[in-house]
Image 1 (cartoon, rainbow over the protein chains, first blue to last red):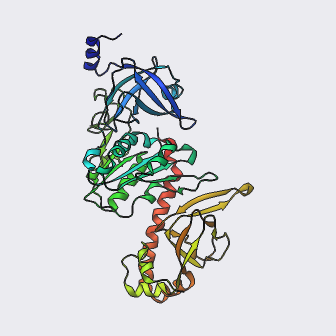
Image 2: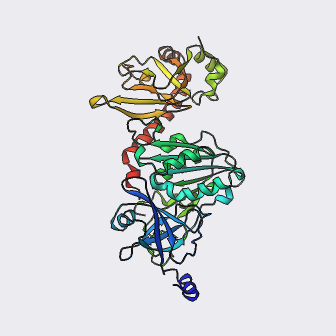
Image 3: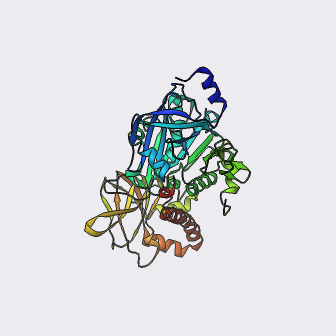
Amino acid sequence: MITGLERELRRADPMQPRAFTVRAVRRHTADTATLTLEAVDRVPLPFAPGQFTMIGRPGLAEVPISISGDPAEPGHLEQTVRSVGDATAALVAARPGDRLLVRGPYGTGWAVPDAVGGDLVIVAGGIGLAPLRPALLQILRRRAMYRRVVLVYGSRTPDQLLFRAQLDRWRELVDVTVTVDAATPGWRGSVGLVTGLLPAELDPGRTRALVCGPEVMMRLTAEAMMARGLGADRIEISMERDMKCGIGLCGHCQLRELFVCMDGPVLGYDRVRPLLTVRGL
Amino acid sequence: MAVPRELLAEHPLFVGLNDEVLSVTADCAVDVRAGADEIVFRTGDPADRCYLVLRGRIALDLVAEGGERLVVDTVDDGGVVGLAWLVPPYRWYLDARAVEPTSAIAVDAVRLRALWDQHPGLGYVMLRRLVAAMYERMQSARVRLLDVYGRHT
């Protein structure tokens, strides 16, 4: 049993992980799963859409993983993980009842409130849909507060799509277009890059764009939207770097003057644009 | 029967062009429709039409081993299907199939090429627009070759 004092001490120390229990595992693909976690102390973990946690199995390395759940339900932490190494493979292999250690949430979130009253273009590539999902869920809860909302989602293949059942439900409230790099038999959707499915016309003064995916894809998407008249300051992207401490101390995630763990991961394209084409950064 | 020039003006390739250009082009165009899974053209057929998609989706595919169809690209609203009509020997090198009910403008490519030959200024304007569409498609193909989603964690 955690005492109130101990809880306060843990909150005061940002490096102190909290224990969470895996409540459910939703497997999207062979290497990607969404874990639903509940804090052992039952204290919710409020977060802003776009933020991440440092998460790991006891005894293994921590990894930065974006929160993919509904910000209105902070009692259930959802994290979508793709297996790319030992630490993430151990997370993807987690089963209900397993214990995990979580620090955070850390970093900046999507400026969803700034888009109220305007149009939103949300562009996701691959697992980049996961960090955007909390923003989308928040928008869907307050759908009437926004004008046109467009989701363009690109994936490697149809069987790599995440949250497939939800995509169909989201279609009832927002314009959803899905495209893949390589079709498989029976695929009737689009084949091609997400940039080919962006709205042909944007209202530059009333549109905001949220983009998450591989850096090349984010850059091309942002540039395509700028070519349609949207200012770089109205485009946000979520950067991925080698976050370790999560609180701007270790410098592993440093991108020139930016600490991606604190200044990001969500950053205005106007701020990060000059850095994206610098070799070695 | 020629399409109304207003219909042609709706397509991004012709947006902003003057009435004269729209009229002479509309004279050599027809509106066409294809049902889901209907073949629009086949590999090896003469590329004698330029298809401008108004609504719907066309898949461009190739037949591989065992008859499997490999979709190279899809063209949606506002897109141009195929460019083989611009390049000798003017033969399609892939199949085009409507994925869903699709409406398009089909422009007689032979007459269009002749028109642009007679009016090089117009041809230049149109080729610049087509190059922009080709550039976008080439950029898309290059990035897809990188398999960026496969690398991203």
